[in-house]
Image (cartoon, rainbow, N blue to C red):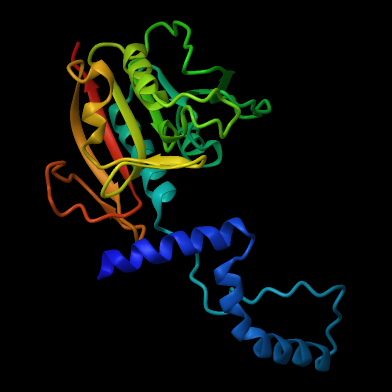
Length: 259
């Protein structure tokens, strides 16, 4: 019953967001009378209003959001890299104002992305515009991250060529760039079955990555973590567990290249 509710509600919410309807803002309209009361009190006490900018969603909001795919994956993988202390870390396409910023706060990080990026004033971020589908030799690389990226390869969303095997080619290229004994941190949407949400992203069952391309003998899974549909993190999970109950969660994988 719970899964059925997720299957029905998640597409409806996605469609509403695509059409520009923010469900949270719509529900916050219940606070409009409170806004009017506060405004009246402000004016009665001699307060001046330069312009109205009505915000209703913060009356009972939390101090912030400490959950969700990006919050958990960005913080977790940045911590893992800090603990591993690689000589050279390269990131492929991950969120610059999230994960990359976390890592850049304590070390240099080289960022590759098919999209352009304005020059950063922060010297720890070294950016190169590049296409992972046609990678150049990057030399010695002992640590690579690719967070919430591989699911987009080949869908054309970011101006890249259509390629139905984009995820296969992408993971193979990532592994080829990595030195022996190097670590690969990769994440992507996971669910109960493989799906294509064109042109947004792919969704994979948790173990589907082990069927991708002819690279699987070259790497070994070191750790599997995942974020569930409610945005909660689950650490050090057995990938063979039957209790990975997600419709559209996020799998976070750490692999080691063995040869």
